[in-house]
Length: 305
Image 1 (cartoon, one colour):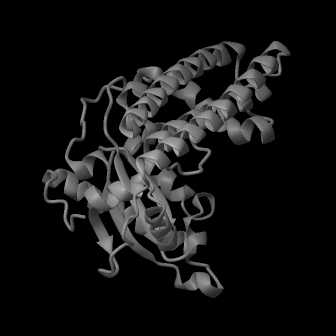
Image 2 (cartoon, rainbow, N blue to C red):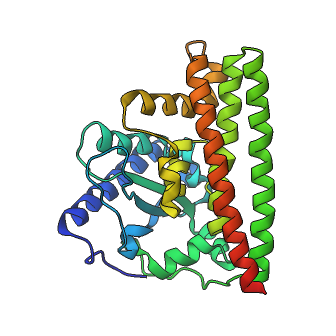
C-alpha cells in the first residue's frame, strides 16, 4: 500500500485533504455525545482505493452524461458499531454530496465505505477481493499508527467461482421477485408500493455486480451510493440512467427515496409516467447486470478449467 498520494495532481491532493477533514468533522459530531465505550471512538485509517489510487481515473468534462470517476475511500474505525452508516455517517454522506453538487467546494464526487479493523481483517482472512485490492493498490490518507492490516488469504479459483455463482443466483432472484411485485402493484394503481418494490428490485442488481466482481457489497439501501460503486467497476452501467436533465436526476432521486418515503411519508408522490420510465431503466439495468455477471462467471470457469 502506498503511504502518499504524490501520483495525483496537486489540486486532487488538496481536494482529498478537504474530504478527510470533512470525514473527521462529521465523525466528531456524530460521536460527541457518546457514552461508555463509545467515548473512545476513533478513526484508525483512511485509505483511498479504486481508480484514483491506481492512477486510471476518468475526469470527464462537466457533462452529466459522461462518466466521471469518484474518490473511493475506506474509513477504518476502532469499533464495529461505529461502522453503522445510518447512526454515524449519514450526515457526513449528505455533506459530501452537497459539497460536490451544491456548494461546489469539491469537484469530484466521493464514495466512502466504513468498517472496523476487525471487519477489514476478517475480509482479508476470507479472501474478499475488494480488501485485497485495497491492500495492494490503496493509498493511505491518514493513519493513527503504522500497524499493518492482516495478511490476505486468497480464495482458490474454484471457491471464487462457486461463491460468485451463488451470489448471482440469489441476488438476481431477489431483483426479479421485487420486479414482479412492482408490475403487480402498478396494475392495481398502487403507485407507492410500486415505487418501493422497484427500489427493492434495483438494490440487489447493484449488489449482485459488486458481489460477483469483488465478493463484497456494503449492505446499504442508498441506490445512489451503490450505483456509483458499481459504475466504477464497470462503466457500461453508467448510461443506464440518463442524467443530463434535472428531471431525469430528480426521478432517480424519487426511486432512491422510495425505500423510506413510499412506505412512511404521506407527502411522497410519484406519477405513473415516472414509474414507467424508471421501470424501463431497471429492466435495462437487469440486462446489463446479467451480461456483466455471466461474463465474469464464464471467465472464472475458464480459469478453473
